[in-house]
Length: 186
Image (cartoon, rainbow, N blue to C red; front, side, top):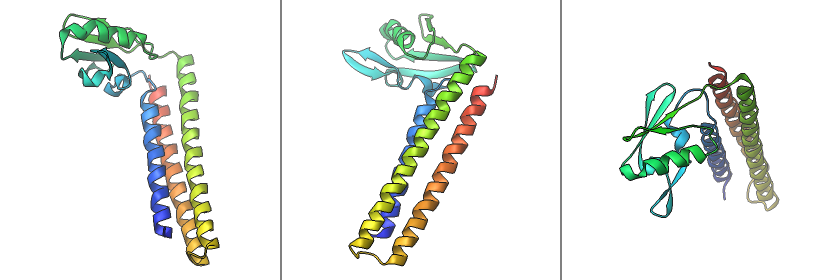
């Protein structure tokens, strides 16, 4: 394995950490409705646990209301129950055609709790990126010990890994700021 391959592998892993953070933060409910909030809610579809977006269409009716239109009308009560039983704290209602999911406004206390959760998720992502940096640097040191690379190549590789780490942590901070701003917007 070359120094460039070690850096590329580290970059790929760091990018996956950021994608995981975005996915986790997407599940944190802000006051506004967005279709991705129901992505992890599963419905019993002919005995198989199936995510809601795979059994119907999820759309926005307005800034605070989602609509789920199942492709099979007989799934309406099942979808409604799955959303109600999820950990999102939502209270859906069916109108015979679709399930309407109003987003309740967040209280100030709930916003603060969610900000703590979001900050914790961001810190977990930062720790993951730093662990990837440590693993890459250890790999480079092993390569130097085995005389697979020269000292200056190993040092340049560590500098490159540090630059990757700095860039990805800055991106995590930016994502965190955006999510906090979303949570604080009334």
